Length: 130
Image 1 (cartoon, rainbow, N blue to C red):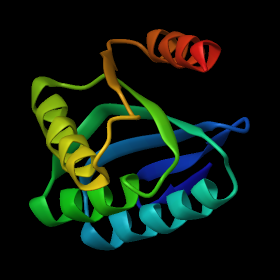
Image 2: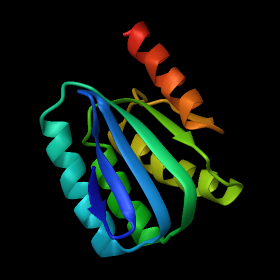
Image 3: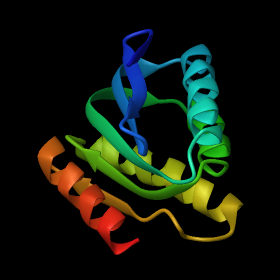
Image 4: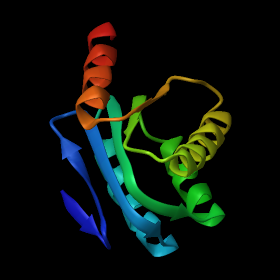
């Protein structure tokens, strides 16, 4: 796992991209996270996104835009978000919907879960389905 400010990101196995956001995310932090995600995306045929938003405080509009631009360029086959408050769910949906619109297709379904174990189960099921 790589530390970017108070946030963490990294690969778990060959195809699970983990992101843990804690507090507010600055523009410089999202740019570094994006660099790492693009690096991981170049090395993978397919990725699943496992996102912990239990401690997220805010994603400013510019931060969401920056993240959306990178998300559309990743080989994502599903995003499982867990621990999100209502506000965090809304922010995540805004960002992922923008990425979906820019991408022009919906190969990255999004699922919200209370627990990490539930999110991982969902990813395992997506993986099993191909």
